[in-house]
Length: 489
Image (tube, rainbow, N blue to C red; front, top):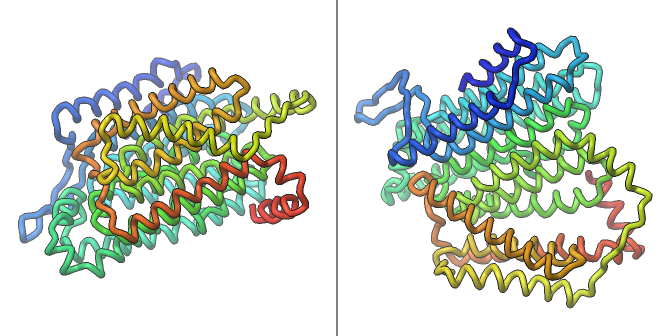
């Protein structure tokens, strides 16, 4: 938890500090403790104080708790955070406030790690607020940039709205379960009698938890501030998109043993997550600014991650968080070079490949046959894994896009097989590591099946738009639609 602050202090003593060894050290240390926790079959816990209630159940345990879920994400935070901190040294080389920036960055990373290692709602909430506070300081680093200040102010108040939801949910859970600790809450939430006796209160708690996570992860309608943060320093953008915005998703996954018993919260996650993903993807297609495009990409990715939680695929959602963190950190830190590359190549001729509609559906049929056929072959039950199959259908859209974007169909087919194999292996690995930490997907009733199926089918919209963008752009209605979508961004 204190590793980012330690790196900062060592950097202050030695300006040439920050070798690759120290970046790798934090990652390997976190990964090693995670694997040790998995091998032990129990979380590693360092208890500072424990308050027991009259029933003998722990009411509040101040401690650090590392299990495979928190360990995997904390390891990625340590690695990415160290790289961002090293990048900021050169990025703000001539900034007289560089020391203040790096100190705030280290404190922000420490707050994120404390949040990940928190075993109760109180400690989690304090770290949740602290990470938001330090992010606000980073967003307002350049005090003369009015747009950055305005975006930071909007983000500040949106975060406070999310805080209110989290507090309300925590108070309700304490009223019902008489504890703030995660472990006893999750254990008692499996009791059918407790759920039945407190059904209304627990449904409200589930909804408030989801709303708090939505505000933290820039989900619709709390997303509007994120694309306005272009004036903030690039290391802040990388940290925000690769780390802090993931906090909402982590919160949902951490609370999944409870949320999995509340159908209302899962339906809300499915609707809001899927809707946000599709809406943000449409907005992203209209952007010309690289960082703004990446901002809408993050909103869409966080939406898809919420959708994954809504369908009960918590292990795959964790994989998504880790993969997105590394991808988005790289994307933001390399955005200046990407902009230069775009300027150099904007006059080069670009070959347009516009397939007929039947070819687009044929490519989708091929990729869906590969993905769903192999899933059935390996014994993935459709009835017990409806949520996973909905995600595989969406993956089929992405794989079909690879096929359509390639000029060599043999090469694209090989890429499809490679991506699907890698995704399957990583998904199986994360499911194996997180067994017992996150629950299996819920049993869906008729309403939930309709919601999941309806939202899944909507992902066909951006697929068709992307592959017919030239036809749409050349039509008068398409140009009007472009303007309407662009003006909403």
